[in-house]
Length: 234
Image: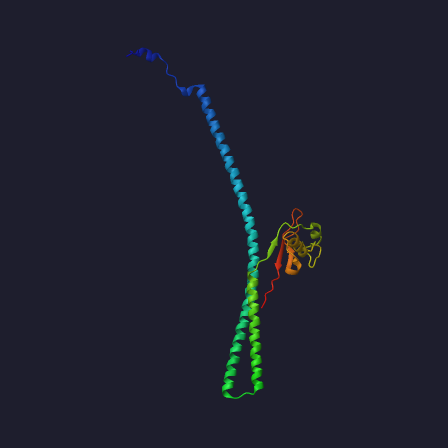
């Protein structure tokens, strides 16, 4: 075991590593690097947040379009429901009339004798009411089927943009009525015939209405919305 000299220990100067220039420079570099990392991380977070906000805005725009379309569908459905309610009321009235007529015929047959001609007339009236009820039921069935059908949209079909712009109302920016600058129905028939290979589509398919959606856009063609004409057999 070595003996230590107390006098030497007292004379030896004690130096602190925290006071050396090399240590201070190293500490500054670490602080600068840490600050740069924090700034870089904050910039990345801002970029990511911007991307998320942009995605949210795009989704909100789509929701606005969907909400507008749903409002139109709700309006159409409300009109159809109102018509169906009116037809249903008329059917009920006719049914009540038919019941009253049958009851009157039965009471009259019990109370007195009718001639064959009078009875024949009553039966004809009754038959007419039955036919009216049947026709109204067919109309109700047609309206119910119509309310469940949807329009069909065609996207990507070329548009004569110059003709479409010329057909716009200059003051209001709306399409002119009965404008024949672009035959959208013929465009759909040609697409069905050439692309979908449907044989003689003009003889098999009828449309109630065919037109483009929105205002003309030189950058892209507008979709074409079609409403099919459905015929129901008895």
